[in-house]
Length: 360
Picture 1 (cartoon, one colour):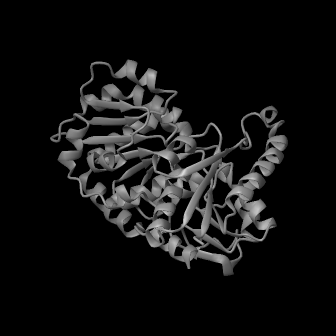
Picture 2: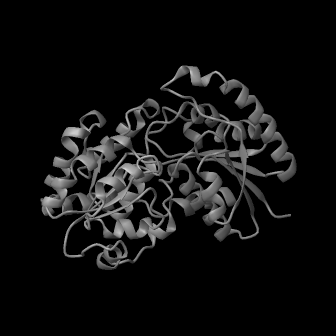
């Protein structure tokens, strides 16, 4: 009988795209393996996973809301309900193993699997492990991590340093800068900034970019701008008639976007950093300050300490982000040095390493 594997997690591209990369690597190694994704209803995995060619089932679950404690009242009931849903899914699919990549749905799926003697694997993308993964790691078969030094969070005998899986379209891209820039209707003769606040957007980054459009245009700098759905109308209104700006709520062709960019403005999620290291594009990082255990700041400082990134604090973005962009855009020597240091940190085959361990 072919092996059956459940992959659980999602909520953001930082969880979904690595999960798909792992699934693709497993299928490449053993095409007979059957894979089922489990995500959270209403989240972006319910759209992105089927687009990648995999089946997905959704749970009625939500994460802990740090901004409003009142919104967490229903959380215990959703968690209990999700366990019943997981039980039904497992009864139908009968998986041999479960992989958790982070996000709302990871915990009930891996917890149920562990309680029923099914092998579990965890991928922890960040430099500071989340509480749920720390709990699950005690009974996991293996814990795949991005960097060394994670013994404070997981049993040392279960740790395997693999790096973070990056989409194959990005890893294997051979696009030229000119080809990529023309894809977005921009001028290859002028510098290009790529601004991505993550798959769901970033209000602070978007507002700072919107306020600095005149400065960027005056400096002869072009912009590829991923805004997220909520900010798109505002971005469209301030970019009308500006030929130096390409704007969208979501960029599907990230291989083109990275190839076109001379530098990147981004949050500091683990997957964004992994991609930036692979493409070797100097970043200005604006860590999301409300991430669990402030792990985005930890991620960003890891690159800053290696001389591979600039950091602008979220609360300082309105006043400092555009000036930091302009300064870095004007310093080609510094960008070249940062690019080389990013390349030294890049891991290009994390998905294959993880797949090898799981299939074996």
